[in-house]
Amino acid sequence: MINPLIPFNIRGAIWYQGEGNVGRAHNYTMLMNSMIQSWRDEWNIGDFPFYFVQIAPNGCCGNIGRSQQAFLREAQLKTMQTMKNTGMVVTLDIGSTLTIHPPEKILIGKRLAYWALAKDYGFDGLPHSGPVFKSLTIEGNKAYVDFDYAEKGVTSYGKKLSGFEIAGKDKIFYKAQADIDPHWGAGWKRSILVLMSEEVNEPKYIRYGWTNYIEGMLYNIHGLPASSFRSDD
Image (cartoon, rainbow, N blue to C red; front, side, top):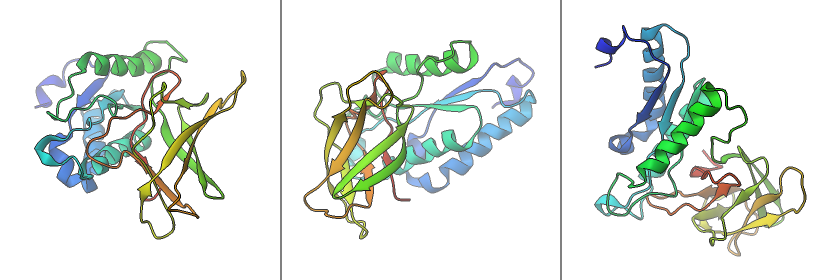
């Protein structure tokens, strides 16, 4: 299908796919990375940009309480983290319980455009990615979460945070109370995410959005949503 296009010039590619691979998340990163590399090899113009859309949460087919989609979203995130010159649009905040295809296509298009503008069209410094889990710090019974692409902190824009879980070394996860701790001032890290649960005295692991459907509400201050994530692997 790609072969007839190879004689034509290409600036980059955008890709929207993954729902059909939910049952095979374990090998999706390998397949996706191999496909991107094969396209780049065929065009032979270097590592041209490849931007893609993370599958949106959905409750289609009665799978609202399950987590297969979370593993596929994680596999897509790993492609962004391992393949040079790739970027991922997060859709965790615009899913649908009725269909696998989120209705907010214009917003998805804008988020794809941010990646291209920032990386390929000279708009240096333009925010283009939502928060990506970076590290976890434990202090007592609280977990403090740090993110890439959220240098000035995170926000929920006034919405009550949900979809977070926390576990001890036994990896039994409980619903976590999530708060955004503000640090007023003009510098970096003006807010940080804090998780805790009365069920877990010594937390060790956390996760967010680890279910098929979630209405994501965690953003960086530029309005770009965080991907689902987990600190255990």
